[in-house]
Amino acid sequence: MGSSEFSWKLKDHTSLPKGKTVAMVVLDGWGETQRDQYNCIHLAQTPAMDSLKKGAPDKWRLVKAHGTAVGLPTDDDMGNSEVGHNALGAGRTYAQGAKLVDLALESGKIYDGEGFKYIQESFDTGTLHLIGLLSDGGVHSRLDQLKLFLEGATEHGAKRIRVHVLTDGRDVLDGTSVGFVETLENFLAKLREKGIDARIASGGGRMFVTMDRYENDWNVVKRGWDAQVLGEAPHKFKNAVEAVTKLQELPDTNDQNLPPFVVVDGGGKAVGPIVDGDAVVTFNFRADRMVMAAKAFEYEEFDKFDRVRFPKIRYAGIIEYDGELKLPSHYLVSPPEIEKTSGEYLVHNGIHVFACSETVKFGHVTFFWNGNRSGYFNKEMEEYVEIPSDTGITFNERPKMKALEIAEKARDAILSRKFDHVRVNLPNGDMVGHTGDIKATIVACKAVDDAVKMILDAIEQVGGIYVVTADHGNAEDMVKRDKKGNPLIKDNGDINVLTSHTLHPNTYVQVPLAIGGPGLAPGVRFRKDLPDGGLANVAATVLNLHGFEGPRDYEPTLIEVVEN
Ligand SMILES: O=C(O)[C@H](O)COP(=O)(O)O
Ligand SMILES: [Mn+2]
Ligand SMILES: [Mn+2]
Image (spheres, rainbow, N blue to C red):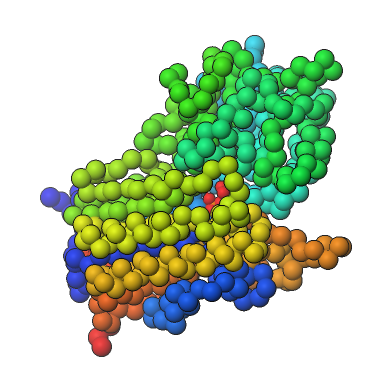
């Protein structure tokens, strides 16, 4: 075989042995920053993670998990699970959805593609519906992209437009949704001045309406379907600003879990249900929380809930959400082609893989890890275990989530000696951090630490190796800060709670990376020459620990072996 021909076979590492069980533990939303009263990791008892830190600098270090280091448009973009797990699994960074949609809108190429031409067929007689997350969070979508697309679509023939908004408060501060809705309303008013019939037709909070993920709770998608397609919701308003303002006043309600509403005309009739002949575009560029809605819009055969009406529409995603399922079949921008991920290399090189998390993060260690592909590479070599998440609650109500159950599965997988690579995501720091509940987040961090301990103990027993890291920050800082890093305090003395991931001014967010275990060969330590290493460097590092060199096109390994 010529040297230019591709082979899945990895080169043997020059000095590191094969045959060690490697536990790959990802702490979701666990960053490193100052240890103050807003740092829930610091406030919690975390002896296992604290002891790993003592290994610095040879066995514990920080890695970048935000911005361009994970393929986001700028270094002012906080990290997130999608780009973090993509980088961890693929060993390289890719221009991600946010960036690809930016480029397609900027160049106008978005309007030349098959996907746009497909929906354009509806513009003469039908309505163009846009459904997605309304904020500038940049994790799932961005308002500036929505505005550009609205403008472009009208220039390319759209005459009647209905926007179905999902309020955020999770990637941006809670309470900001009214402002985003106002901005959009003003923008649509300008389109109306130009003769375009453009309005907001429905809405609801992202965690309660439409944006469920990994099939945790189809009721969430159903609520969206009822409002967007059927024009039915428990709350009816004359306009969306009034809707969001009023609904927020309900007890225990915030932007994330706002109940669904529809906008109605003077006669009480919904202004924008989706009907035969319409076009629908979901404008979130991130897949996980749009896949379920995409299935509802696309699949003829569908039994997840009663759709009542299945209109004959032209549906496109702003991007393709699942390359394996080819979902949706029409899309406006091609997704990053994430190929030859470390997970695929592992199974081609005889490594048995076990991956586990609970539902809300299950796809992170499978779908995202494997380059946005659902399913196994090789069923004989892999086992993916999903522990059902609690549904119908916000996670501050049960902050321990399923951390213990995940750790038990990982422990059993390690002790069974059937697997060489045991990968888990521990969701608590992130999922509870997003609720903004500091007390609950402290409990969450302790639960994560207990889980880490259980996994490290199992690794100890089998003489294995552990790698512990995180995908981005969240629980380590729960307050919104000014540019200098000082907490922003409201007039009434309350803090401005930070529900989103973190991006610490000056240092930016960095996450820990620790290696160790009895199987780690003597002399293995972190290199000193890659201080800017990021999550994408972890894949080659892990392949080394399995006894292989990383592929040549991967970001370099973070470890070296020195003579003792
Ligand atoms: O989808 C979410 O829950 C948040 O927008 C981002 O969180 P994640 O990137 O950790 O999933
Ligand atoms: Mn995450
Ligand atoms: Mn998160």
